[in-house]
Image 1 (tube, rainbow, N blue to C red):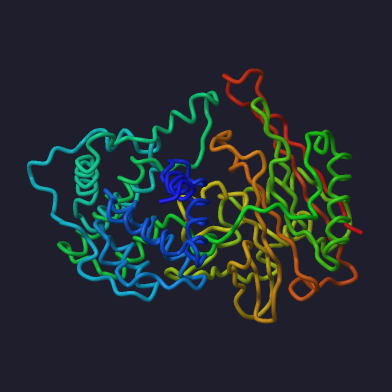
Image 2: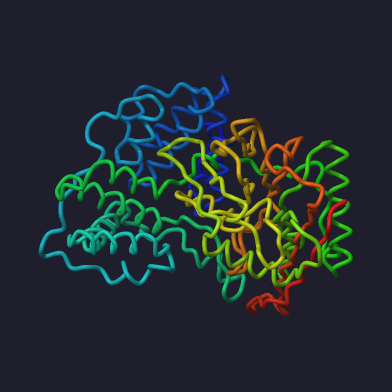
Length: 482
């Protein structure tokens, strides 16, 4: 194995979630390169055979799946190389057009009566691993009166035997503690992989011994996908029309509005006919401060002034509560559907205005892509139109389309990226949602309508690098477009 490939595979094992995602993308790309295909395939199959827990195998199969979606022909022996098969890895292999030989689970048994539940299993919930796994097991237990939590504890405890040297490798504290109090980040360390594997194995036990329907098991297994299939192919690349960032552009309201105007001019000069619908990005990051700028385009259906602070508070509350409904997905399809709403659904009655972009709820998440959630993924708000609105990958971005054609493109980039960030902010990356030429196709405007940008600045500061970040009063405003 050449040294560059070995380093890339080693990076794929890092506990930092985004790093793993980017490494998986590069490995999938190498599978498509004729001069590297054989060597990379052989190396990945060897890695697959050495997996100790099911979630590790799923991530490796995801690499083959990503390459297959771009034209790669997977090796016929891929399923046979699985030492740690699972429902999810089998679903991915079948989606690659291959058969998954044998059972989709490895040596299953119900937890024996003498098993003593590990207290560590409960202690790490919400710390090393998200509470999602325990919550999901508790809900299934309440509905079925079957011991899902105990079984998951058993499976997690057993997985330590597969990794006797370091069952807790990839300590999150190694990354978090030097940053100061109350940071967070997207990590998927060994303990997380053990928990994701225990979750999958518990579902397999429920299907094999407790008669849980296979369709339900398959649907629940998709909740631990490493990558959302729609987002899997997004590549960080800053748009050429985006003006440079610095802390001065958010110094005061006038500076922010000057920047928005320069941004609009730059976009028009490069992409005539396109309009910015949303921007969400850090604009300044250093050890003592983080500043974010968020912009969303709105349509004003009346006259008079708009109270920026009140509108922002109502908009934020609706987004947090899922007021604009949620995106829908099906299985491993790369297409996500955005709900089509009516104007009455989205109109803010106090300002008589409606957003043209928003965040939505999601029916599936990729645990390696958590830097993007919840505030980075803005999609168009489309009202009173027929047919579905679909999102699918396109050349490293996301393309949003209706039955009549393309609507908008969402691009993403890194901005002062670090694996750790303040706890009440999203990851240190940015996104921009830009319409395709002819925005009127999905947002027709009457003469009495005016568009404006609702913008707000979020700023965190601290005096020293070992203190917690504190929030400064947010700055927000309204800027009507020309």
